[in-house]
Image (cartoon, rainbow, N blue to C red; front, side, top):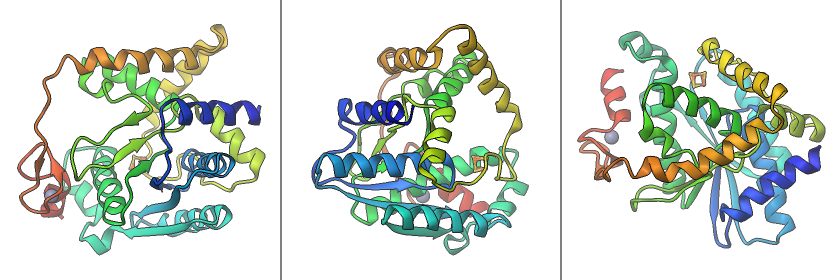
Length: 275
Ligand code: SF4
Ligand code: ZN
């Protein structure tokens, strides 16, 4: 099973050219099983294929009660993989996560998403990286697909693919090596290799509502073999239809921080103004 999981990840990396010579790739490490799987799979792929590529980890410490415990696990993962680790403390950037969520009606996860997307582009780029690897997995994309489809939010679906190429000099390429492996596979990968990871739901803001969606797709798979894999393949090939529904939005630079955004002031700076 472990070899099957690896081979599926390696096939995704090769087919979509997620790793190339002279790449400098940052891996966004949350402490969880998915980002750990990305790190160790990328490392093995690079070594096996003798690719001239630099791999580095980054972790965002949200400065919550649980953050120290999470950081310790990330540090252990980085040490085991023998990679350098960059840690970003939100408080050092003037962001008090708990204060912000009290001041807005937006969900903690949506605010967390704005922060992560911003820092996972800015920090690696400033450190000379050209790609960021994230732990979004096959199950996440299927669940996002259903949710967005039901809400007629087709624009997001256009981004559901293993690689999003940079469209601006300040945007780095995003790679998702786990596009064709899900929660079950990542759990097995880490357990088989003895990689420690944080338990699911460790974040105090974990939305338990979305758990039902994961149960739904696993229940379908009980009746329809390979449902998740087939679904992920169909989603990846359908993205081009969703892309064509929208005219290209101009990418501007934030008036406050200069980072790429579609508005005058980026989402991250708006949060900082609120803090
Ligand atoms: Fe962020 Fe926690 Fe929500 Fe995950 S569960 S997106 S870490 S706020
Ligand atoms: Zn900004």
